[in-house]
Image (cartoon, rainbow, N blue to C red; front, side, top):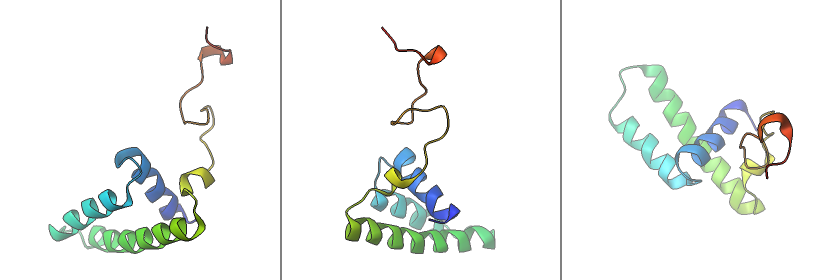
Length: 90
């Protein structure tokens, strides 16, 4: 996945509870407000194309792309910080 695609997967999961549709709706709403910065408008259109590609891939392969992203160092499988000191909690 490209950097931009990884960002979209993370944004989908963190801000839109895993929903491509909600992310797409949000981006389309922003685009309809016609940002005055051309670069932002172009980026939104490109992101909408990326969402279609990523959604289609997930459907075709039956996979959640989040599971393919490397976890940030210092987090557990859910992305939470481990217990202080790295030990088990009681």
